[in-house]
Structures are given as C-alpha cells and as structure tokens.
Length: 90
Image (tube, rainbow, N blue to C red; front, side, top):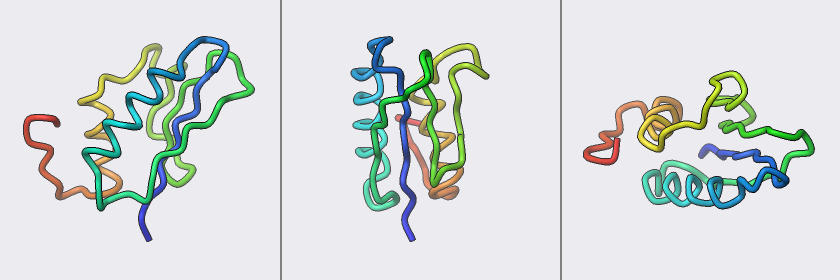
C-alpha cells in the first residue's frame, strides 16, 4: 500500500502557496513511491503540519519554523522509501 502525505495549513495565514509548492516537490521526487499529497485547510490558526498516513513527521509549532524542502524530502524518504537516493535534491 502506497503512502498518502497530508499537508495541513492555516488558510488565514496565507500558507496555501507554500503548501502547494511543497506538495509539488514531494509529488515530483516521490513519483511511484506515494499515492498522493493532500492539501488540508486547518481550522486551527497557525497550523502547518505534514503527516504520512496520519503520522506527523513535521509540525511548524513544535519546530518553531517551516521545514526546508531538502529536510522535508529526507523526512518523507525515511518513511516511504528509506533506500531511495535523493541525489542533488536531497
């Protein structure tokens, strides 16, 4: 069964474009490894979290920042395909 990544973001904070960019990067990098990426507007102000199959791998509030795209790809890779070489993008 392939993994589903969910990016939950705060629409009031204007984070849709950031979420869409990260979704695009993940879909491009993990083609064939994941089932898809879901963008989910949050009811909680300030929320920006990324989960795989409902398991949170990154939370902006806990980390105190947004993830770098390289870091995010490594976090996702470690769950969906630990042997995958990310090359220059990872």
